Structure formats: structure tokens, C-alpha cells
Amino acid sequence: MDAGLIPAKLFECQVAESRPVGAYRQLALVAPEIAYLAHPGQFLMARLAGPALDPLLPRPMCVHDIDSDLVKLLIDPVGKGTAALAEAEVGDRLSVLGPLGRGFDMEGEGPAVVVGGGIGVSPLLLLTRALLQRGREVRCVLGFRNRSQAVAAGLFPGAAIDLLTEDGSAGRTGLVSEPLPGCLVREEGNPAPEIFACGPDAMLKAVARIAADCGVRAQVSMDTHMACGIGSCQGCVIPGPEAYRKTCIEGPVFDTRDLKWQ
Ligand SMILES: Cc1cc2nc3c(=O)[nH]c(=O)nc-3n(C[C@H](O)[C@H](O)[C@H](O)COP(=O)(O)OP(=O)(O)OC[C@H]3O[C@@H](n4cnc5c(N)ncnc54)[C@H](O)[C@@H]3O)c2cc1C
Image 1 (tube, rainbow, N blue to C red):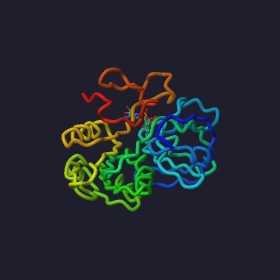
Image 2: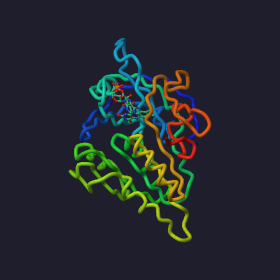
Image 3: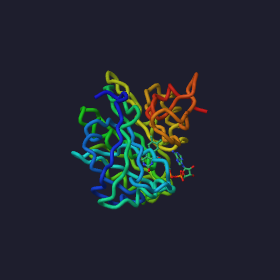
Image 4: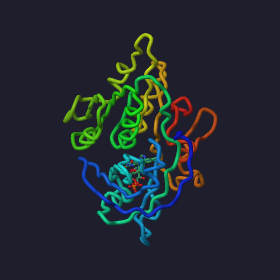
């Protein structure tokens, strides 16, 4: 399936599993249609089903993983909306719109360097699995604030992982931008490496600069504030070289050359 837009539908999905992954919470939803349709990098708009009006708006959540009919979310409970989702129990129902947006383009052939920061690792698990299935060489560079967040690095299957934490409590001390240039050396006769990234804005800005300096392509998934998820509210616009871009329908995954990095 290509990374383009496919029709989104509203579903009511039952929570089948809920488990902690260090500082985060992983929920598995029974969502066979989304599991069939979703492409790595796409997202859902999710809220607890039912009459509760607070929080009113759904929150954007990446499709973190797919296992048969189950669609998994990885949630960092940073505020009211994400806390409500993270507290959902097995048997509860979520209202879910999706799959939404444009995901990662996986058509390249070079080695994939998958770069994640904090909860930005969420969409990168499904991506890593899909890249490995395509026979791509994959190296993951994953950075977290601390050991509790870094537990999420253990979710990644079969790929070489460089783990970093800001406080040095797991892996190497530092930021993902430090080892990244060393991962982008092109071997003679081989296709150039390609970056796939998701994380905080400052990290993505550094990734865009390093990609430009090293002459490699980088795709980044932008975690912009978002209200509708379907292109109506204009709440998620970010600057492109010539015009503003709507993260929800033109992204959330962009080639770094299609955005303006201030
Ligand atoms: C396409 C997309 C995919 C996402 N995927 C995931 C995911 O898989 N897992 C996950 O946990 N989160 C994900 N997010 C981020 C998540 O949607 C926000 O953290 C959430 O909307 C915050 O809502 P809240 O009510 O919990 O917090 P709020 O009370 O709204 O905010 C809490 C704090 O977080 C800040 N904040 C809120 N949203 C963002 C944001 N998007 N970027 C930076 N700071 C923000 C606020 O300014 C505030 O300081 C994604 C966002 C997008 C756009």
C-alpha cells in the first residue's frame, strides 16, 4: 500500500490489553479495519467513547504497532487527554478516527537510519518492522530523557540499536544528534543511507541540518498540536519553504526539504 491518503472512518474500539512500557503506556485496541489499512507513520484521532465532554477533542496518536486485528498505541501521559487514554482499562471503548495522514515512504533501497526521541519512538516500531521485512538494513538511534523512558527501546525487534539517555541512566549519555553523522557514511557502490525520524522539534531540526550537511534524504514525522486531524481546523499548520503545510493531511511525515526550519 502506498503512503498516500486513504479514506478514514470513525470506529469504536475495545481495549484488549493495557500494559506499562517504562514511563509510557501501551494499549492494544481491537481494530481490524485499521490494522488492515494503516501504513507506518499514519495516525489516529482517539478519545474515550461515550458522553464525557472533558476532554472534548480527540488526541492524535500514531499507529505504534499492528498485531493481527490489534492496533497498538504507545502513550506518554503529558496532559489531560493523554492521561485519560493511558488510564483506559481492558474492556473500555475508545472512539477512533483513522487511519489518517501520510506515512513514511519506504521505497528507497539504502540503509535506513531510524532516529527516535522520547515518545517519538511510537511510530518507528511499525516502520522498523516494515523496513526489515523489505530487506532494508536498519540501524535505530533512540534517545530518551532517562532509564524509565528508555524501556521503550526494548520494543524494537531485530535492528541494531544505539541507545542514549540525557541523564546517562541507560545506554550512552547524550543526544541522538551526536552519533547520527557517523551512521550516515555512504559505502562506495552502495545506495546512500536514508533517515526516518520522529521526536521533539529541536531533535528534528538537528536531524534536518545533519541530513542536509551529509547529503542524505530525511523523512520526519511532526508531532504538531492538532484538533481535527482531517484538514478543517488549520490548527496544525507548520511553515514550508513557500506556504504553510497542514500536518494532518500533508503530513505528519514530511521530507525535511519540504519544511522551513527556523
Ligand atoms: C501525528 C501525531 C502523532 C502523535 N502520536 C503520539 C503518540 O503515539 N503517543 C503520544 O503519547 N503522543 C503522540 N502525539 C502527541 C499527543 O497527541 C499530544 O501529546 C497530546 O495531544 C497532548 O494532549 P494532552 O491533553 O494530554 O495534553 P495537553 O494538556 O494538551 O498538553 C500537555 C503539555 O504538552 C504540550 N503539548 C501538547 N501537544 C503537544 C504536541 N503535539 N507537541 C508538543 N507539545 C505538546 C502542551 O503544550 C502542554 O505543555 C502525537 C501528535 C501528533 C500530531
